[in-house]
Image 1 (cartoon, rainbow, N blue to C red):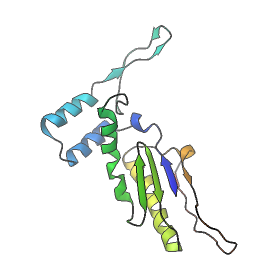
Image 2: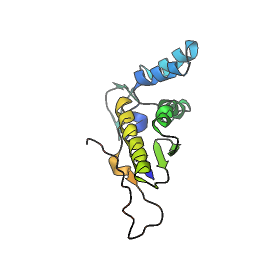
Image 3: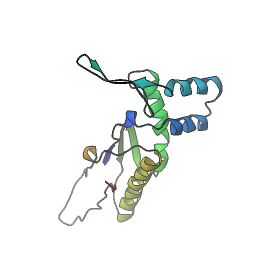
Image 4: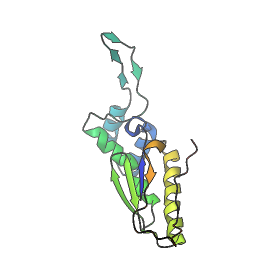
Length: 158
């Protein structure tokens, strides 16, 4: 079982890439323009006590406190499931991915490792950094002295 977490996922969604995905889902016309306007030309400032920073434009991310933000994020990561072989089960919850499968052979382990490698490549393509500190691989099941196991790992260039 592998638990994968994306670092600052809601804040790092690429607006051009999200808009590209929305078009690929068939969203166009007035709705597309409305979402594009919702994402672009947004600005923010920071407040510490009674002191405000200057305003900066927001160049990436979806608004977490909105109703639309989480939906846009889910549409952004929806195609991650295409990375997985039919033997590997996937559960998505916000910015967390859980993969699990039964490893009975070295071939099963290779298949699982291939899915992990494809997730890493997907994260590079779509500019969502994997948080290595929040990821883990858990081996659940019986083990015997004769069992060498079939190790898997999530390799990232950190």
